[in-house]
Every structure is written in structure tokens, then in C-alpha cells.
Length: 416
Image (cartoon, rainbow, N blue to C red; front, top):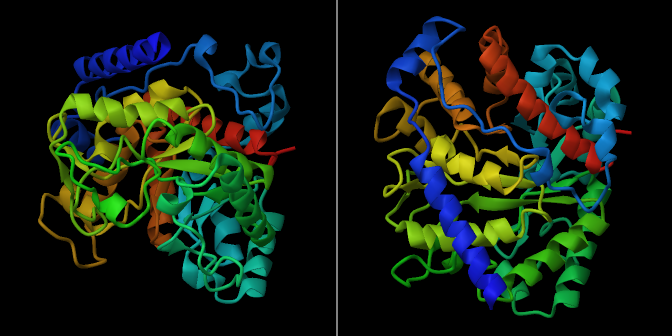
């Protein structure tokens, strides 16, 4: 009981400290960055102490060997790191909608997002993915949403998993049963070449008023009671044993009823409730190497969606300095509309100025990897990040994120 009380108090103190210490990125800074690659000061990502570095249980790293390397990179990665241009490092930060191999190779993206339509012809998908990886110096993170239940990418290609259990169903099972299911599903993903599962969902089952959240109604939440952490840990362990890393989402806890893919969802959760939600993510930070940010606006903290708010992204960073922080789809209509200051965005003819503002806002907030489902815009994204890197501050930011991504790939066994 004392340990639980201490942990809860620590979380509340950490949350309060983060809220107290952050500044908003001003509109004038964004405007300056539009006209110059050297804008004035922006919110910086806090440096992490070596003592607080979280080690992935899937691999071990010689601490002495990385003490003197840039960004704590393993010494084995230094020849690769030193050979990369800033554009290549920036490209590692982009998770693009799965595209033809030639396009992926030419642009050297760090990750791809695989959707249900990409798996209609499994053999063709595997051939395209293999061709892409064969032509790339740095293998891709290949991500999909295999939560189970309603979000089941394997449903139409695997007879065994056409009715894969939802998070709500799995959280009622014994830990060993969860691990066994996850390991089997992970093996199916691994056979396809998929190495990153955009699951589990750690969003709260109840909002601050005690009502079921949108995520709970969709049976996607692992949140139930004090057993939830071990249940999720069993799921992550099973996936990892099949060579698939996991992504927790949607930080710091999607407790709104609105679907934020279509419009900005609003949460009026008080800080106490946010602390409880955050605690779930924190307890699993050593098990899950990536977290996806929420697009919800937590109005008692900021007017910005969480993914664009430095104070909230900093909370995720404090969980682990090596945590890779991933955005949700930046081409989503709700996020683009918020950046443009309009109610809705309906056209693909999104203003170049607004798109650059979107990239800069995500970067200034502290995100490491930018998901985007519009491939042509992914190319534009890399070019703008390269331009921003002419400023030393942004060059450092880009390198910090690229290093975290390379360390993730190394620990996952993708870089040998």
C-alpha cells in the first residue's frame, strides 16, 4: 500500500511540475519559421539523464559503450549514424502510408503504415515490402493496428483470427491466455513482415464523470482495475516473443466521447483524473517502447490538441528518455482544421503555409515520428524538416528523434 501511495504521489507531483514549467509556442514563432529556417526560441525537449534511461527487455546495451556516443547511440550504430545526411535522419522521423517500393527507397522513410486494403493480396504485399527493405540501408518499421475486436487487420486474411478478441474481452482472461493469444497473433504479423503493432489502447474506460468513454464503448480499452497493468504486460510480452514491438495509445488517455479522427474531441478532465490516466501509461513505460499521442484537447491544460501541446508531450518524454513519441495521422481533417483555424477541412488542396505550420508545431511539441497517410505530403514533410535543420536548434531536435528511432530499431533486432 505504501508503495502504491508513493507512486501515485510521485505521478501527481510530476504532472504538476510539467504543467507549471512549459511555455506555449507563439503564433509569431510559427510565422517566423515560415519565412526563415532560423526562427526564434521554441519549446525544447528536456534532456534525459543517463540514470533514468529505460532499457528494453528485448535487448541489452553496454552502458559504458554508449556513454560517449552522440545521443546515447550504441557504438555499433556510429558508422551508420556518421554516414547519414540530415535529410536521411529527418526521413527516419516519417511514418508514411504504405507505398510502392521504389517510392519508399527513393525517399528513405523510417516507417510505413499498413492498412486493411494493403493486405487484400498478401503475396503481393510481402513482395513489395521485401523489395523496399532490400533497397533500403535502414529497415522499415512496419506498423498496423491489430488491437482485436473492431480493429482487426488480420480478420479477412486469417481464418483463425477473423474474430480476434477485443481488448475488453482479453482483459477478462488469465495473463497466460492473453500472452498465448498475443504471441500467436504476433506470429501472423511477423510472417507478413509487420514488426510494430499500434496497440494496446491504454485509454480510460470511464471519463471523469464516470461515464463510458468512446473507446470503452468500442471495446478497445484495456482499462479495468488494478489488474490491468499485468494484463497489458502479458499482451506486450506475447507480441515481443514473436518479434513485434507495441505502441501504447492515445497518450495521456482518450476520455472523450467524440471521434477525434473527424473533429477535435474535447476533454474537460481535471488534472487529478489526467494523473490517473497517465499513471497507466507510466507503469508500462519499461515494457512499451513507443507511445502514440492523442489528438484530444484537454481544455483544463491547453487549448491545443495533446499532440501539439509541449506540456503534454513532455509528460510522455518524462516516462522514458528513449521513448519514441508518435503522432496520429497528421493528415487527419481535425488536426489540419485546428492548424488552419477553421471548423473543417474538406479539400486536399491544403495551403502550403498551413502544412508547414503543422509540421513545425508537431516538431516543437517534441514528437519523434510523424504519421501521415498522404504519401506526396510525406516527401514535402522531409524537405521542410531538412530546411529547418539549417538552424542548429532544429538540427539537434531532428537528430534527437532520429537517434531514438534508430535505437528502437537496434533493440528490436532490425539493425545488426
